[in-house]
Image (cartoon, rainbow over all chains, first blue to last red; front, top):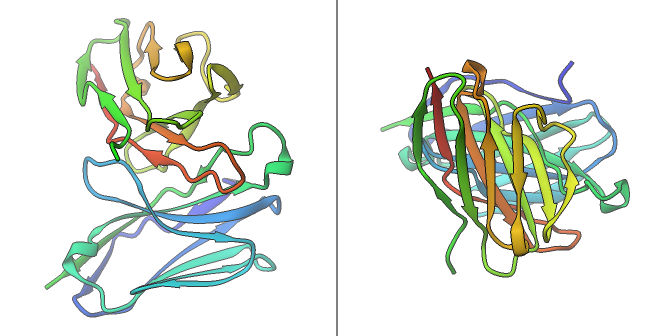
Length: 116
Length: 114
């Protein structure tokens, strides 16, 4: 079983739709949760960063973390064609977990296409 | 602020050949990471440096992969000899030291082993 599971999609939605992306994980030591966006032939760029459980909103993006269920989500409101990309969830342990705390464990990514 | 620089962007080699990738992190970032991203998968950490010391290389195939970070700045990742299954994008990332530890990624080197 992978530590982080993410539905690879692909997901295709019309412009203006609300998009929901999800990941589940098995390692209860994960404390920091991130969403990265990766355009074709580019490196991942950080979208959202959350510590422990709760919600965080940034413009059209909302990240949710439910540690009791080991489940994280990213919602995109009013989706745009420019949101078309691969979305990667990533997580890592607290720094108290040792010197390798920087290691990110990624899901496999969800390919999203927003069509006009 | 300049981002993480990587070169080359693309490389095609035959199996059993050797190849090297170069990374220049964001100025001032003490921590440097090399990830391998196979098509259709998320990045997987190969090695993490703190300044010029190795912090984590538990997932680096040490029989064929090596990496160094001289003077705590630039880094090179080498594969010798390459196998077909090494075809992937090799991503370099860097971060400031600290609990928040946000990692910034370069555009990657796309390796094709024929």
